[in-house]
Length: 430
Image (cartoon, rainbow, N blue to C red; front, top):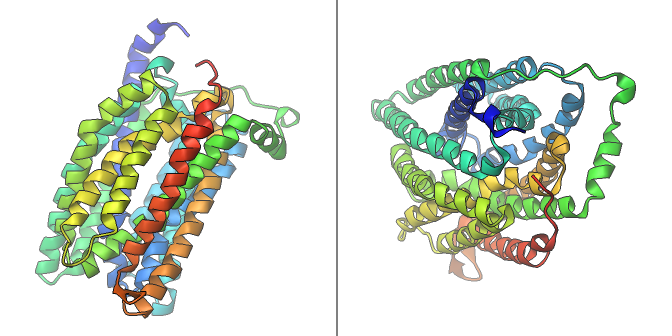
């Protein structure tokens, strides 16, 4: 495609709108993760292990991307479909913070929470690959990593301000003895974020396609077979699976660990998270430049090495050494600068771009399912350690420390796999 078209006003406006849309979506994601979510679920008297599993439902929700295969082949108006489905999903996340005000029986609270989380992620992940491909269609293929880095930096910087402000407000409500007031405040903020998300999507240039005849639609299993016979793509799926397993084995249980065992307030946790986001912000551009110059797989491997260091640090985090969680948060966030966007873009390296949505859906669904399985296993391990009085082989050890050790071992395998197998696969032309 002529480089001149990427400089056109329509394309420039669409890139900025997509960049800001990602920021608003990130703000909502912050509200349904870590200490914010753990604080809400703890107030609703949901057990720690269940909180960790619910926090990891994002991994299981990746299965919803399989439905994107059907959407991608039948969609004629990208803008209309993306906005409708995405915005409905975001509203379910808002509903999550209204549950404490609803007369829900105690035995149904967990069901209601899971329903809101799953429906929210369903709306999000049904069209996430569609929106990603739509937004990136306005970006020069040779500058995708650079654009992703800039987009991520804006989200992170704005996210630090949002999380700091909301965290401070929640702590103020809590100190005043009005915990539910904090939840209502978060719900109002999420409504504002969702409106911003909607406006940004409306500002993006539309993409329309000719209506595909049913006879011309490639059958689901044929698409799956075609992609899974691509050995390079299979290796990408395996790498994504290992990364997801290492992440969800531990991270879903860190929110409750910080607030209950390390006795940190929601505000303090957000300050730590902000520091981590700033560290990621400062290194996002260098990581993006490294990936554009070398390759996405090398950028991912550098991120995994840093994540390995983070989990080793977390193995030693205890109430007496609580400050290690600060270092852990800083290091793990820096690792995301290497893995997050590159794991999305790496599909372009091994799969024809016309199959990007389908390939991303399959990759994310398989790796997400394995990630959720890791969180289930992590919950069982956490329950066992807590039931034993936080003792293991006669030593005092918290479940999150043991989970971090398992995550570290998985990452070692992922690093070796990326070096010895995936890196040797030929990359297709952009």
